Image (cartoon, rainbow, N blue to C red; front, side):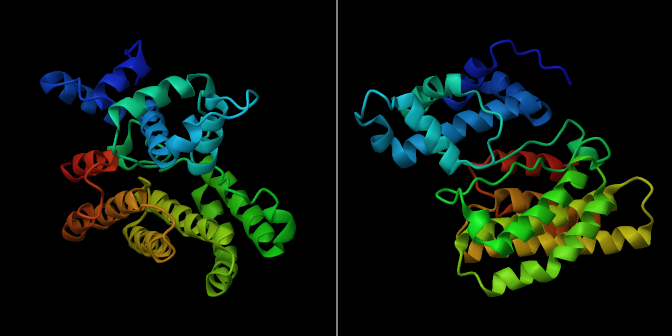
Length: 291
């Protein structure tokens, strides 16, 4: 869909500040469910607020002239928000100021679905966009961790197929990585490895979900693929929870979607309860469940 909102940052700011009320608020929530651009704007402004809340004093503290507040905030966002790939750093400080004033409290990491999300047809858009992990303080990790180096290279190869909707080919590469993923989990001495394994299971699950959702998939293949998708996404959730990696709203959203494809509406409703009340994933999940 083509977005008709001309001043998107300002409109999102009004929404987050609680200044959109009644019908106008309802219409905007309906709009952001379908509009990737506005949802990305919502994501960016909320993530900026998260960084301000977590590191506000450090970021705003006086430092050398060479390191401005804007630079420190940009660096903090890069460190704390690994899934924000295409942000506009010239707007960062303005958003941060608004965030600090309104004290926004809902924080999440999300790359929105396309406008066809309710159809569960992933022939023209992936279920969830992959953004390369940037792990804080581990810029040289691949040079000193050969196991992770091998894992990441093959994982990114699978993601390359995933990004062009070659889900079956992605699954083949993911399957080859399964023994190494299990080995890394058995030796979790380096926490830097764990987000990669979590995302391995998450994107492997999404690839199976995409195959199961294809129009021409037979009933037998669909059942098998969706069962694997559910199992993989549940593994990603378990890893996040065990090692306190992050919130699991995105994983629970797609787990709920997989369960709906499977036809298990009751379990999907139970998963809905695991999504944070302040997360826009909840709005999208409720919308999906209502179809």
